[in-house]
Length: 284
Image (cartoon, rainbow, N blue to C red; front, side, top):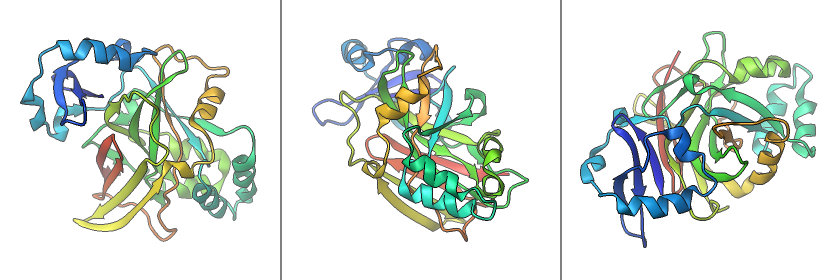
């Protein structure tokens, strides 16, 4: 099942027995109520087939889609892949903070930080931003969990955790400024609600285009993560409540070379198996 937030309401794509998806209006247009259910898959399985299918939604364009978020917060986890640990150590070396990233990679407690409100997040086809006061900027493609207020992972989406490596590398205490600003988070194109947890063999792909040409292209399987999804959720929910549920970006294992930085006009395409592609352009 895939839930899309569109300008015409909430739509469910229902795949059955390996057949192409059929599109139905969701049983409710209250996004916060609809997704914050521990048994969401079972609920959709029961309610969706009883509503009439419509092919009108097959002609969607990105301008019809809204980010799949209502009153939820977006949080993020860092240094969950070895490649990310190495990159963070290198960028913080001159500031004397490289050792922190090695220690958190091996520690029991993961790195978790607040990423974005819904108002600062963007969806498919929208613009992500790079800071005017930053000289080194990269996208971070991340499998993003949706967790209900009861602490259960019931869905997944594609996330882009935009990052200023120059600001974070100057001092690890600048992490909030490097990570949290208008247009620093993108999610979409849908909320994928499977019957079972997503496969550990799932592949994340990042493509960056400049003037129509691919300038970076790489992929990684989520089984390269050191942290388990339920482990990250357990720490996040220890002392924090989420009345409408929340999104959690699970870290990146794809890091462009140190010589690369995003420029205005670039296109970022992040594709995750089963979920789809999140496509955004870059603005300053």
